Image 1 (cartoon, rainbow, N blue to C red):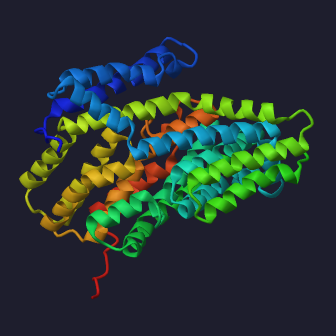
Image 2: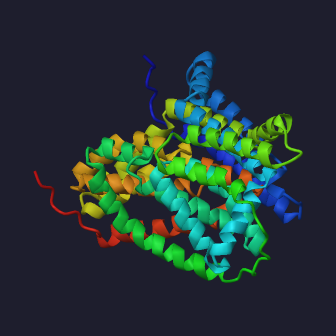
Image 3: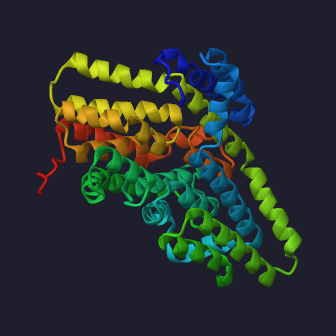
Length: 441
């Protein structure tokens, strides 16, 4: 059994070093006017000094520390994420190569006024993510279409991607089959239905405000020049959406999309053959290499920080602060739960893992401060999704940024739903709404 090391703050230093290098270099190159400033030092390279520092700071032997790192890299969540990256990249590349993206955009613009493109993208993403229970699969499927809409209507590409990310996070937060919902309800011992009701009452105002804001921002678009499209080229996207709504595993959905897109290209495009199809798939893989390596390194780094007591230190500090404030009411406990899962998510860059790590302590805080466990489950899910949708090294922003070829930092300020959801959740804590109905036996 692995020895549990005592909590200490210095174990968190490696991730802070990574952020200093990654963000600091981007800001520096931006200040001196360098093009593609945040790509001058690639994120997977910027994280290497942080990994070295984590190994040097480790209190265990080198072999055991490296074993923890490799175990973190090989975590099932990380590997699944890497596979989603690869398949999403291949699907996007193949569908674009055969003309599927252009056809889908042209068909959409034939029915949707340009001013409604952004709210439409947000709603579609939220609907699909709710049905699928995964934000990653939603972004992988819709980001190429969002990019096409932005290019056709003159919309800001980061804004279009922000709408997709926001909708994907909204669905991930509300879906009763998402990993975050399952983790939040199980750790707090409540039903998914009760958690969903409380979540919806906080999330719905944020969703409505996001729709209004996106409609206003979408009013600056130009009327696109409509082009003809072949309906057959749109069918792979339709199939992917239908399969996603059916609840099929995201990996199977994306794999099916790759096959259908390739077969469509073979039947329709004269110069499209099996070799071209294979080349497009590999180009899609290549495009995802950077974020895949970064995600694996972050998984390994997080494992070391967790083993070295960094996350335990965060939990202890929050419990200590809450205890020092005293039992001043439910708001203190709710604020402590929200802070705990938010900080944990910043360091592990995975909302499901953050909930699992924070869950037991959140339940203790809920009992100490007489917070309804349905409420604590809702807050865990909401604040983890808020942070996950905004951190530039999180999987969702990395995937959208890679598919759109833009800097992750350009997206952070454009995910309006997450910012509005955070504001609504903080207001809910301050003003004590919504109040859970008494539980019935």
